[in-house]
Amino acid sequence: MLKSIKQHKKAIIYCLGLLLFVPWIFRLNLGNPDDTFTLRMLQHSIPQIIHLDSLDVHPPLYYIILKLFFNVTFISHASPFIQIIAGRLFSALIFLITLFVMRVVLEKLLNKHVPFALTLSVCLLPTILWYSTDIRMYSLSALFIACELNSIINFNRDHQVKDIILATLFAALGAWTHYFTAIIAGLMLLYSFIMNKKRKISYLISGICFFILFTPWLKVSMDQVASVDHSYWIKNQLAEYLNAFCYSRLSGIIGNKLACCFSILFIGCLLYTAFKTLKTFSQEFRKYYMMISVILFGTIILGFILSILIRPIFQARYVYGISMIYFVMNLPLIQKLLTTHSNSIIKWGFLGMISIGVLFNLALGAVNSVKNVKIVQNVSQIKKSSVTQINCDNELKPVTLMNSYLVQDKTFVTKHYDELSDTCQSKVLFKSIYPNIKDR
Image (cartoon, rainbow, N blue to C red; front, side, top):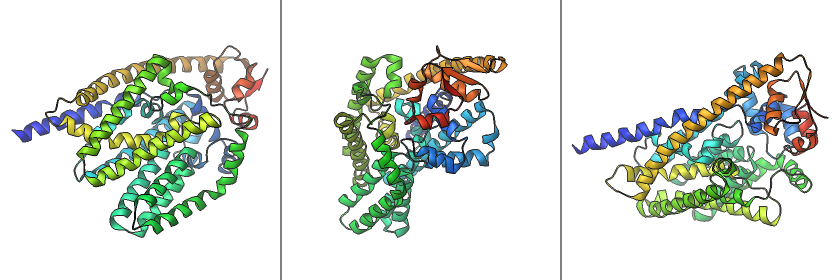
């Protein structure tokens, strides 16, 4: 009888988790200007990508890997619409691989089976929902951080040299993917160096090697930091800091005040979950849970301080790589509460979040579908037009950037050229990425 009840509860968890997959895939929309930047970058050769990326604010590894993926799968020769879908599916695939890696980590630390369907529930969280399928480097950065964590756990357990080499390599790959991932990966090695009494030399050598591996891009990064003094697009928005886990896109849907209240409530739930997790699980699990927590909140606080004292540089998506891992490491407590007779508020809160999240994702998917139809219709009209120069003075920035990519044999002219070019780190970069957008 008890076995039957347990199997029934496990089946419920699987069904709830798998229900998330379909609405999550609905995120495959066509209207994100960040996607067009990436896809425009991929139209250049790898040496040109490295050169152009030196004018941007991120390292080039993600663009190179995606370029190779497009070449191998012949997506490079497909239509722009197919490239957008393929790029998003690539990010989704990386996201799923990261979940498998984190599932291995959890089972290793807990010594028990963790349903993969349960780990899928993290895609309900706004930060994860928005960026797990974007054609940007966030999913890839999370994969490298997860692999680094897994290698550190293996090294601390078995003391094999290959594991510390892998940890260093994954940290370096993360650093070459995103600047904030470089901070996170470095902090993970530093934290391990401080907290491990017996293997300090190994982690010291690892940290030095990590720094050396990033040195080739260090000069470029210093030039990029210097350029921030006279040109940078991030605005100083208090709401963005408060919505560290929700990001401003949620604010655009429900308003800044409500989004801030949601963020504060959500952070409160995380603190409660952290307290319960540290009381419930084994010493080894608590050790790594604390490491991920300290690095996540330490990175956010560092971003806040630099943004307030020097220049706004922090956005919630920049900590995606570690926040996704942190959310996954909260799932064992959720699983425990769901599979017991507890009437804990967090149990019912989680079930409520799943229900609301599925409906919200489905509604968002429906909105995206409508937007996609409008984009396709608009592009069709532009393609059929005999006019070679399209006036886009009255178009929104995302529409202009997207249309200029989807219809590359037309020239788009606008009197808002300077405002549009501010979406890039430099005017030279903008002209190279969007050659068919011209100043009126």
